[in-house]
Image (tube, rainbow, N blue to C red; front, side, top):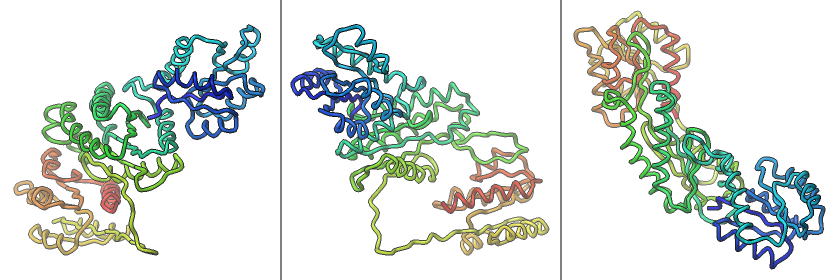
Length: 437
């Protein structure tokens, strides 16, 4: 992985070969350009971290520095000048023109290497995250761009922690930072020295590796993350498997424990030539992983399709309402129909299973029943825990205000009665959209 890149613009073959060998001994990748034309191509493709310009070139060095600064405005590399001159006025003019250093030749090899390494170290230190001590998005995007142009096989992984904002709201920023630091250490332990680990945002990690290692890494990350995540919760929350945000008299959906979602893009099957294309595919692949509950990953695969083939996904707008109160069920039906949903009403608990098999709802509004029997609660448990891969979302309405009991039964939303129709249909819209993703 090209983590440190230096561009040397020097027409002298012997001297440039010497400098290249010295820096490669410090694990620095060096590109040599004999003129500015070839140098600009390297700047565009690899965005070097440091550019060395020799005054052996038949150009105005001060103008060359200005041009480089314009062309590398977004990446801002270190610029150093190699010169046979040792005059103080020459040094001042070059530094005033925007160079970061002036290196007079001949120079001791060890001093040359030390000064270049010091510049690179200080440059990279400005791009570290204080929380994880990883490179931030500026360096990560640069690494992706270099991978594209390196003409080797690569896989880029976008690693995210889901439900982190809810976790931070409940447990605080310090606990959140500790969770991210722990996950960062787990990721670091799973990759090779030649791989790259950085961040795209304070909560997202990026890994660049070889495609042969990618799926092994993501499987290990999901296993390791799921193993340690309970340690960041109270014993009660960890055992329950979700957390509460509000009191028993307010609407509450399940806030699951944090999980990890990972999207993987590789150039094994598709050639990428632009970083925007890679990042776009990476974000879309990562979204697919986030759609599934719990920790998951999705790897971009080659697509096979017949000519002119179009696959239209059928949208499920079915809502099943189980409400013993006939007046309320009529009101719910009328409101749902006006909003474009298909509705089926069931007033008796015994008829629910047949209605589900026949109607295949995306959303179920399920009443708890009377306080003594709570028939709706038992039905919810059977649907969620005894039916394999039950797809519908259950909104559980009840006059018994016991949030933990309802959510433990598998309900996706706890909605205490009386409730406002606008609140109910806001949640129906959210669950309907999630179901059809």
